[in-house]
Image 1 (tube, one colour):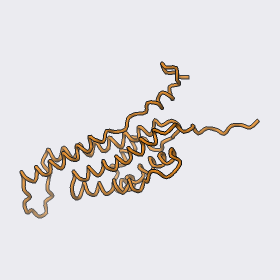
Image 2 (tube, helix red, strand yellow):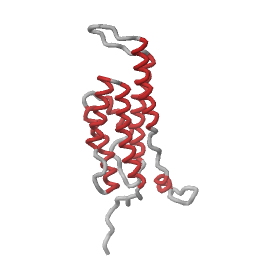
Image 3 (tube, helix red, strand yellow):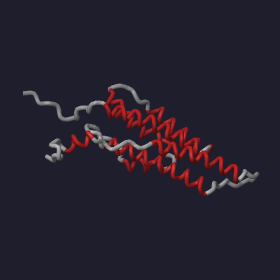
Image 4 (cartoon, helix red, strand yellow):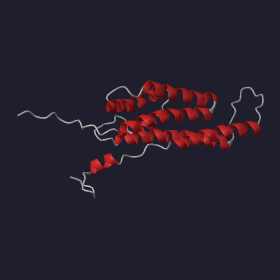
Length: 190
């Protein structure tokens, strides 16, 4: 049996100190910085009437949009790392798969609904009732991606992190509950 320095089994110490949830303020900051960069870009380079050309953002705007998207994927990864370390819960999705499925065309439209559903299943299991609504998170993420890629990258990024705030809040409350008993074989009757 692996024992920690404090005398507790190592799995109980790990349960007492789960990995931290992602820092969402960074995502909000990147979203607001992207909006500011959009305004600066519009002031410095007014739109010209161009047909058949896709406007290419300046480097600073592109970098903010890219870093914001990467940080979103870091947050998704982090949620699944936290889920992997919950005692008594077998999370079906590895952190790498959770991020990787965002890059598969067409399937990613399904995936933005699927991974929040698995987290909601855990939250609802811990609360023993329907507390987290996975469809709402999936719709928020889908709407944020539509906003980000078709209309306004900064506002879309902020909407992504609003959805992440809902996930974080639900997870934080669920993890604050006392641990559930580990599922094991039923006791034998003698």
